[in-house]
Image (cartoon, rainbow, N blue to C red; front, side):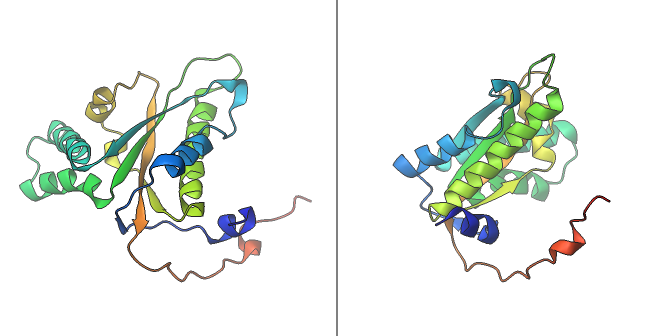
Length: 186
């Protein structure tokens, strides 16, 4: 797949099944994450891969514990939903902005670099024939999750990249009119 086709046809797939990327394909996806813009060469990213029923179930348990910590009266069905979230794909990569104080590189740029790494991994997966979806939400914000994954005070979870094989057809999406989003400065 050439780069322009990738950039203009990539889509998020929420229905994912086995197999997840492995071997050389996974290594290429990891390499894509490390080739993103990185002001100052800080490499402000870390990744935690959850793969297999045991690891994905553990991530679900972490989500459930975080939900209880946030709201001790949480309904059982919401607690069960938290446990099931990671099981929607055969692989979930927690993407972390590992930020550090720097005179020339603000924390915001470091978070943006980490976000670029998520997009690069998703694009690499798509180019290799896999599907994925970048998810955020409350479980990227909860302190319990951050502490359990070993994040520092300035670190952020920029999202969870769910990867696997697309279980459905590509959605038919209209082509947006670029004139609605771009203008020329005069």
